[in-house]
Image (cartoon, rainbow over all chains, first blue to last red; front, side, top):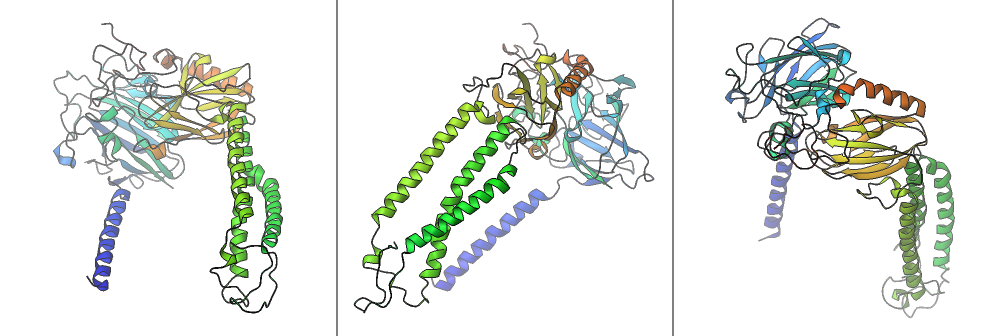
Length: 228
Length: 320
């Protein structure tokens, strides 16, 4: 092969390899979850109502992993969206409502049964004030809503797996399906991206339970995108 | 190899045209001046600011170690750079009278230089090995994790144990001398020797408290012990330094070293505030076996009998 031919082959392979690398890096960096914007949903300075639900199986209507456990969020227009990146205003009270449709179990670390970082370090479980939930009793804890860097943790108490109206796939609706309604409030800090996650290793079928939906943005973790 | 003997220049057989200077002594002189000046500048201007600072005994010891390493490394790299720069200037091809670079006496090795180089570098490497070992031994592990049975322990009669529990993706801390409460906050008393007992509930993490100069792997079912003595109050940054999954980058928190009085007040208040949850935690233990404790996912069975015969973290084992 001539020098020009060899040079062309080398350059061609280099371009293919470089293109693949760029594609992989860009694909990795792009967010895998859309962002739901709550900054313009209400007048500036007023509290943001953030309503989410947790479901044992996301179902067929929300992407490639219908069997995965997941969070959904209600957007300002009232639709359930499969998104875990939420844009909220800084220094603003967030009124969090979680509709927990999944069952629970004892926590790997009962520390996550303690409500922390919310206003008054409390939550309401079906209207009842809770400071600490013993995950070793009742239906246990299904998930948590936690923002570790802000010290926020809200245990999401599980529903009975034996209930005859356990929701099988999202979006679930209350009260026709077995549900626990958990409410808590917290105040956002200054602008920044704050990762939030579930502390229950609930990735069924994955090593340590922390793979799959626990390790994929858009299911059991995401970001609180706090903007000024 | 350049030799420092007097030589003639020009082509073979040509008449001597110019006396060569003692190049090697010139280089040694340049190197010695630079090395002394830069080492002194580094020691006095940069040394006090070398990470990780001097917040704890381990930190100041490591700062001293890094400074010593740099003071030794700087002359070595200067020797290379001075030789390179001198060669580029003195023996560049365009300079008049530069000898041909091949063949003859100029290409011969120089025994003195060879022996000197090997001996010097050998002394430096072995010296640093001895220095590093002595520093590890005399400084109770110099802030590094020593495993469950440390052989280098602090001499202090009073040591505060603090357990670091890593889990995907957060560090929490238990204080066994205060009823075993667990906290998301790391708070430490000043002027106190601390024994960090680092363990994990899932995968391998790494507890890196930068300003404390503590760094210890967090392995499941293993108690990795690291020591230091706090010397200043202030803020501490804790990061996970072992790639541990999706939120590894978010696995950090901030701690504080406070006065003994403030620490006691915080510990007692937290003990009371967390009492309801502490009752639900397993009895304090240096390690935990989190299997059979609600960890879905198939690796750990979920509430199945028999439970582990060892300690469990979370649920009270059901009786068989």
